[in-house]
Every structure is written in C-alpha cells, then in structure tokens.
Length: 137
Image 1 (cartoon, helix red, strand yellow):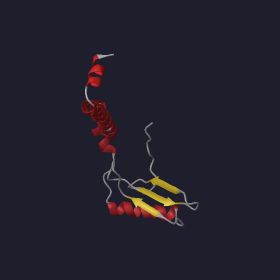
Image 2 (cartoon, rainbow, N blue to C red; image 1 turned 90 degrees about the vertical axis):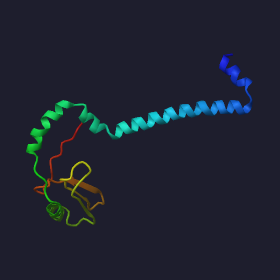
Image 3 (spheres, rainbow, N blue to C red; image 1 turned 45 degrees about the vertical axis):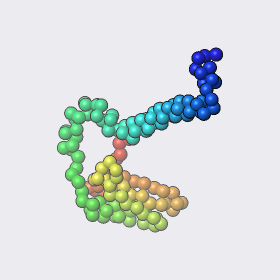
Image 4 (tube, helix red, strand yellow; image 1 turned 60 degrees about the vertical axis):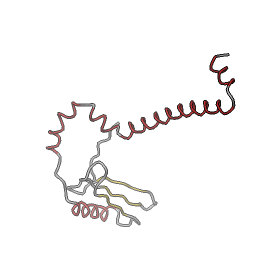
C-alpha cells in the first residue's frame, strides 16, 4: 500500500471525508476553470483571431473606403417593406430587421411562405435587393 492510502485509512471518518472533500473540490474547480476558459475563448474567437492577424489590419482602411455609408433606419425599413410587398404579398408573417449584432447598417427580411416554412433574406441596405453574402468556410 502507498503511504497516502495508509495515512487516509489511519484517519477517522471525519478526517477522511474532509480529505476527500478537499481533493474532489480542487479537481472540480480545475475542471470548471477549464470549461469557463474554453467557453470564454469560444465567445471571443472572432475578435481574438482578428487581433492575431495583423496582415488584415493593413488592408482595413482600403476596404473601409469602398463600403457604402450608413443608410438611415427609416429608408432601410421602407426598402424592406417594399421587398416583402413584392416578393411575399400573401405571407401570413413579415419581419424586418434593420440591424444585427455585427453591423448597424444591415437589412434582413423574414417571412412565412405558403407552406409555413420560414424564409430569410439579407437585403442590400441601399437598394433593397437581395445582397450577395460572402460565406466563410
């Protein structure tokens, strides 16, 4: 037998439960720490990745000059309502989102089609036409 097993078995019930509580608690704390750390890294993955790729920082000013300026919210809502009136006039449900969590100059439309399926479209905030969306794979 190892020395720690002999030492634990020589203790009384109360001391052995205190020893067990201490070590199980420490292992559980480290497990929770690992879970919270990986969860935090998952939440902040995009900003950390951006921070770790300085080559993107050099190209950002050039790209920023090609992006259109912000379109006011009322105009975006009008464009979204016009798109839905043309493309889903008989839908039982419309929803227009003039912003999302990543950008304030966005336009999204949602509706239920004739079969009751949920349909979503990202629209160009300047023209109200379906936008070409770049997908990161």
